[in-house]
Image 1: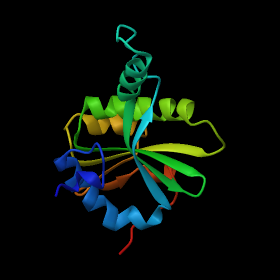
Image 2: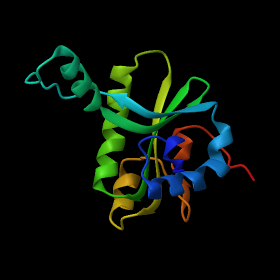
Image 3: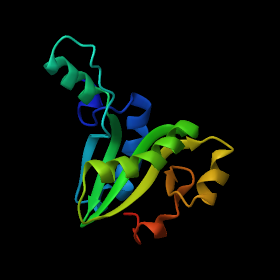
Image 4: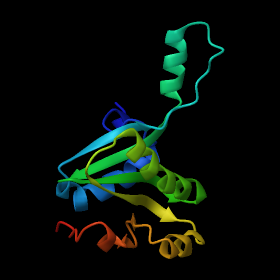
Length: 152
């Protein structure tokens, strides 16, 4: 059976990356929400019934890989085998869409979790202070989130 049932929406290579992150940091979180739908979706008014229009709109919403909860901190997490421009755009957009979809009193931060980084992406992440983790490089800019310490 595929492990995708545990982590809906994650690709097999992304699951491998996530399962390297979780033993180190997973127990610091109260829980995770997976495949979190945000945004308004893209309605298809041309569909024949209102039910189909609602279904298509819901299915077209953006999906956050994981949202980790630590007390009243919510951490939007993009999980990918390789961080490139696509993942960079997602991690910039998802916190905005999450806050609009789930208003409330909580701190909101973001984290990229990846197997590897494309060579020219590190300078962008560092210039924008976007936290990221890879198995080889570990955590960067985590002070912006909390003082999380890895589990031994």
